Amino acid sequence: MTRPQVIVLCALVALTAASCITPPFPHQMMLQHLPTAAAILALGTLPRRYKISNAAFMCLVTFMALHVLGARYIYSYVPYDEWSKAIFGFSITERWHLERNHFDRLVHFAFGLLWVYPVWEISHRYFHVPERFARYVAVEFVMAFSMLYELFEWSLSLVLSPGDAGAYNGQQGDIWDAQKDMSFALAGAVLARLAILMARRLRSR
Image (tube, rainbow, N blue to C red; front, side):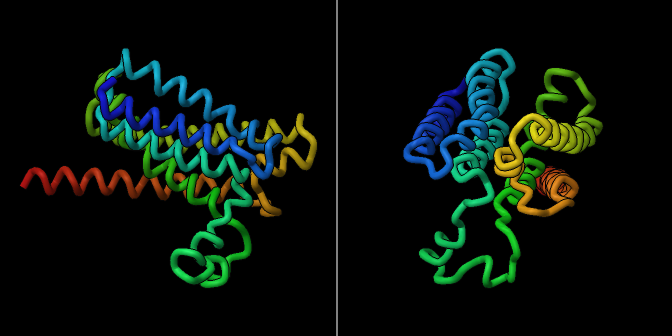
């Protein structure tokens, strides 16, 4: 691991620890932090063998930082309205007439946006996928993983109490929540793919 990667990983660990201080929903938060612990372990061990660029590593850590924030408030109750009022003087929900807390949608969008580049880099560098095809593989990975995660959430709803399942899944009464989450991930992935393509064309000029 490079020095910048060690620094941002330590920052993520510190953020995770801070998120556990007097959480508003301690039981549900610990369930949310199970993937956090797995991700931190992976980020701390895998790059030692499979080296990735600082940019790719930063994409992964940024996504995990958003997840840590969502985990503290179990996504459905992230108080971004209070934050926007304090910083900008208005409520996001009131300004755009929203009917639910949309932080989970932001994180699904960020998953597509921030994972495309690392998956593309790893596919091309270590699995020897042709560069152009690796870009397609990265978008497909986002879609496949999004689908698997929604199936995981559904499986949890079969074993958890209705209250705990609803708190973890963050559906907030939306029967199309899974489909919308996957759509936001796809939108983020497509945007990332276009951004990478434009950046490469600009550098080639």
